[in-house]
Image (cartoon, rainbow, N blue to C red; front, top):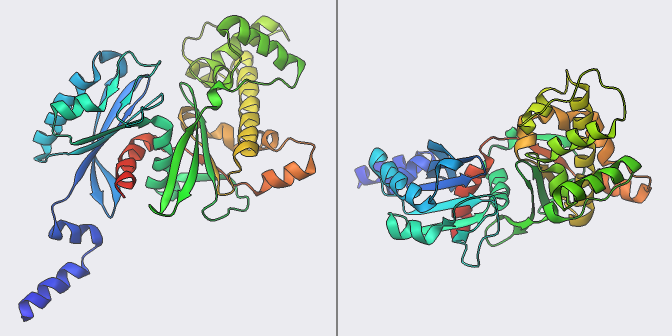
Length: 358
C-alpha cells in the first residue's frame, strides 16, 4: 500500500503534461497553413490542452497540383519518422469552407483542399478544413501573450468582442466572440476585403477610379491586399505626377520591394505613407462596425514583416482621426494589438482542433 501511495504521489507531483504522459500516451496532431506562396505543415504535441510544435515541413504552393496526393505521403512520413499515428488534422486555407468544414475551393489556389480525400488515404480520422483567418483567431489564443505588442491600451472589457484584421497576399478579417461552453474565443470570418473603398480626398477619389479601371473593382482588398495593393499605389502615384521625383519609376515585381526601398526611393516612401494611412482608416472603420471592446488585433504578413510601420505614431494618429468627440472617446476605449508571430496560423490550425473537440 505504501509503494502504491508513493507512486500516485509522484504522478500527482509532476507537471500536468508529464503526468499526462504517465497516465496515457501523448497525443499528436497536425496543423497546416496553406497560403498562396507556401504550404506549412506542423506536427504538434498536445500538452495541457495546448499545441506544442515538434516538427515543421514546408513546400512552395506552386509545386503542388493535387493537395491530397501531396499530403497523404507526408502524413505517412510523419508517422514513420516519429513512430506515431496521427489521427487528427486541421488545414487552414484562404476562402470559404463548406458546411461540413472539410473542403475549400479557393480562387487563389490551383487545387482543392479536400479533407475527405485525406481521410480516405491516410491515418487521419478527422480532417477539418477551415478559413485561414478563423485559425488566426485561435492562433492568438495559442501563442505566448508576451509575443503580442500593445499599440494602444484602451479599456479592455473581459470576454468582450474581439476582431482581427490583416493585410498579406490578400486582406483578411475575423470576428471573435466569447464562448462559455468551450471557455475560449470562437472566431468567424468577415469579408472586409470585398467592402468598397471610400475616398475622402481628391487624390483618393482618383485612386478609386484608377482601381476601377485597372482591376474592375474598388474594394479594400484591392487597396490593401499587399501582393497587389502597394504596387498599385506605387504605380498610381507615378502616373499622377504630383511632384518631381529624383529618379525614374522602378518596375518592382514584389510588393516587399516597395516597402524595402521606402528609405531610398521617394516614390516608395509616398506609396507606403498613403498605404498605411488607408490601412489605419480601415482599422478605424472595422472598430466602428464590430465594437471590439476586448481588443482589435492587427496581424498577417505586412504586420509581421514591418511592425515598425504600425508602431509609428502616425498610424494611431490616423486611426483616431475623427472630428466627432463622441466617436473619438469610443475609439480610445478599444485596445489595439499587433500580433506578429510568424506561425500564428499554423498554431491556430492546431488549436482549432483542440477547441473544436471541447
